[in-house]
Length: 239
Image 1 (spheres, rainbow, N blue to C red):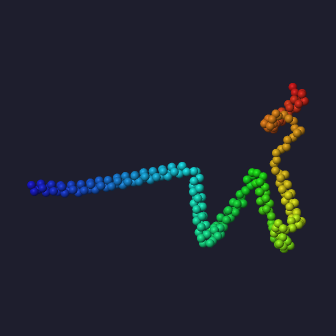
Image 2 (cartoon, rainbow, N blue to C red):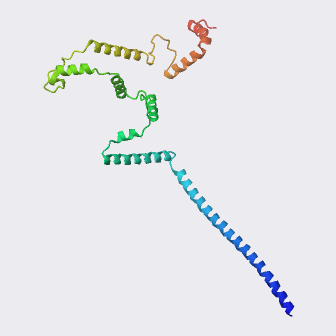
Image 3 (cartoon, rainbow, N blue to C red):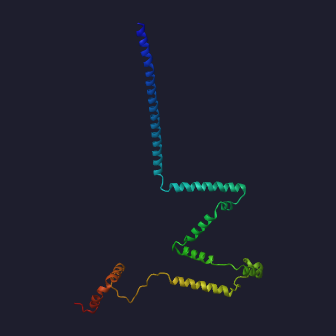
């Protein structure tokens, strides 16, 4: 009997480590499964957030990013202006300190390339552009300015009681410059494309404006082939 008890004890002792190893493996697998389940839920949550954000972006205007960047830049500029005002500094001068020479040169090239003339939009706009162009060409003569200022005295800045009106005599150089500029304007106007005038001596072979345009196109493409037929019809000798 003693030997049987010993054998049973030995068998039980061998089974306990085996069950312990099995339970540890099971716990490890369950822990791994819980981690995977947690990661799956976390990934599902992140994917849902990305889908919501993407849907929001798709519903925004196409230029939203540019508008947002512009608004952020304007807010930053306002903050800088307030800081400069609080310190008693000129914002424009402080801003120029942060601009490099390369940036300034690039902006100047871009400004020169820009064409402010967008074409004829009205007589007032055209006259204003002409005025701007002419005033940019003016180079003030400071010596003559100071000379006239000394000669006129208080009347240099006339008032309603001044009698200096109509007494100014332009110089010969000033008259020559004006004549040269007027001649340049006349030459430039002569190069403009104007609407062709109506020729009263031309043959009338149309019934309306649309038919006249069609006849001009037909004459341009087929005139050399039908010239003889047309002449025969006009002379009455067509066969």
